Image (cartoon, rainbow, N blue to C red; front, top):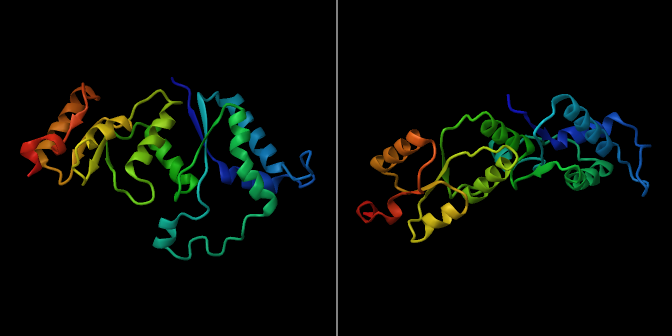
Length: 221
């Protein structure tokens, strides 16, 4: 059985540690370091018990814009982060990385959004991801980069095929260079999609990049 990946909601752990330990625990500059100390000790304890192959700390926005748009009162009554905790959250990635642990974040998303993505990839829930390049907040290239970064600690490979409305010459190679396994231009044609799915079903990875309508003259019209 492979060793687990330990994915951590870093703000949550730091927040809990901050209120669990007294502010009298300070660093050489006199500022409280209880959140950093408590979070680090908690992960060291779990590491000794579980022996994870990698540890990823997920950071993110306090309140993701897409959540506020869906529900305006979201986090509306949450008190501001204490100043003594805020600086520890900012300092945490550097401390964690000194232990050889990874830190991940994405603009416009919260830590648990990244946790969900890591959990989905870790469980191999997807045979193939059709990645829209023109997504709001985080585009397809950024999302692919985040997935590929997480795979450095898992040794796995999630097949990803780009979908874009821009059928420009060179787009297919740009997608491949970004770490994607294939490319389809919109509007998606059924025969192209079926051929792509069959190719992945046969080998789980294409022998060569799968190129969609952007460079197939008969399919451009």
